[in-house]
Image 1 (cartoon, rainbow, N blue to C red):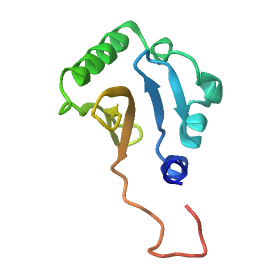
Image 2 (cartoon, rainbow, N blue to C red):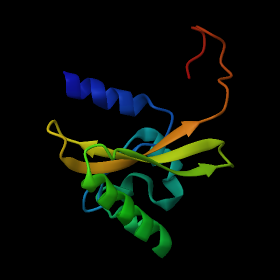
Image 3 (cartoon, helix red, strand yellow):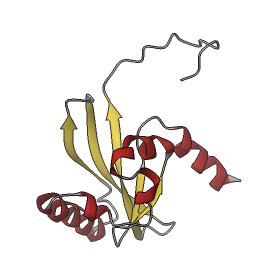
Image 4 (cartoon, rainbow, N blue to C red):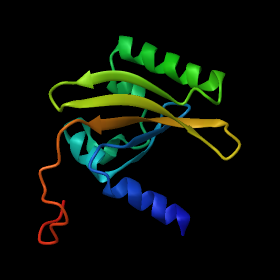
Length: 126
């Protein structure tokens, strides 16, 4: 039941969520990510290397961040850039199993835009 709840959290998120294993293989994309990366292949990216989607400099930085995640169980999130077009901060976040072993990573998007929906407006879904 809990796994279904966690998956539902990801599925409902309006921000893109792309989970990668330690080999940089995309293992999951939520609907927002599939839509957002539609021009690059959308759901067809699942099972492919994330590194194939980035330039040489970005690949080097991604590998350095993942190595840093592996150095300590406390190394779990790092700020990567501000996306001015979408007004959001972007982070890389470590994914760990129950004993703290690094098992993968994902990119976290935090939008700075103020919500435009009315508070508790039941006539409209987000």
